[in-house]
Length: 529
View 1 (cartoon, rainbow, N blue to C red):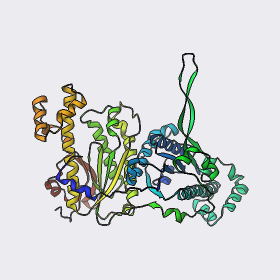
View 2: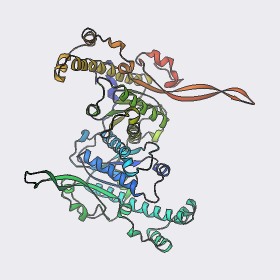
View 3: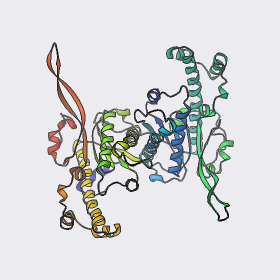
View 4: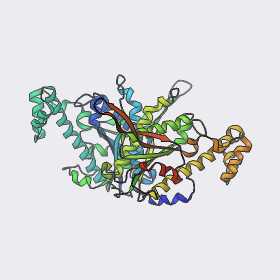
């Protein structure tokens, strides 16, 4: 990032490293997936295709991130276990949970048609995520046992509930009939009333799915005489087991023993309250501005693979802007957002109680929704280009105590926009027009100041930097704006109706003139300086 007088705002960023020897688990679960399943008409109590889609997404996560060595999931949730020595993203909780949930969300949208070819994805799914710090492998064992027990109890209850509903009971009547019943009673109800032996239902429904990598032999090429050359490869494998934390199951897999550690005893009694005490949670300071900054992960490669125009691809930037507008419309506590290149900063109102100001919930839902929307909108902006692999974004959330510091944060990001874009414009002109290699262009520009870059563009390429498109030079600001519309009623005549919509502007947000002209963006009663 570029140097400027505004860089002091970085001191408000809090590092959230999960210290060794804690084992790291990232758990994601669907946001309002009850509604999502109803809108998309999932089968009840279990939709095999929906569960297999979740499994496919989790498999993709394991294949993308080698530090994840085991995962367990059921319904709309999945838990990912990192190897005990992982240094991925310097073990920073916000980065880990945001990156995993972002990639999972992107894959979910990309794979939707593979599992539901006849169904339209009507709106972008989103997921929560959080980090669980397991102080020992015994805590991890207790955590996984807790999740599998939840899978069994929830699925048994839901199976009974939906059989009663399909049998003619209302949902309220079915819930009343099941209230306070134990497992044995539910099993008897299914067998006696519906002739269902619960233990004969598919294992995936009753036990959930676990995924880990095992060595398999694959043909990598063929000799001249036609005989195959085989190599051992590590591939993700989906397994359904009655007890994923039993020492017999866990200890028979060498990869789990090596990367996580073995279990010496079976879990006898599950204590959810014990496991919950290890859940990493950070509640943000009240009465402060909350900023969620998301940033494209390896977007340099992503832009090359998808052949974005250099130094700026207008369609790619408009796609980012469109996703940011969708986030504002989805999360009402976000009042405005500023973006440049592959990053966006979302600002929540000072008194926001969004997810009770829990950092992990706020950042994960935002980055998940943004990622899903990016994939869903891809064809709208790139109708001739195939999305070759799922994009992902990492995120963090930071609190700023005053409006002045908040505006200095935004100024810092806009200074970065200007410096980086000016450099990139010079760099790509040297590469495209002068035929220089990338290393030669970097060497040529090393140590040059803004004035020298402007002169280079004018003298060598006839480009006045200040005449380039303003979105490239200053980024994009999206915010809510009130509109007063005249409405006519037969009895009352013309009346005023207040209406809000999100608009996108490209402007200089460093100077106070803009904010003075738009006081409602922050707060009509809040002084800017």
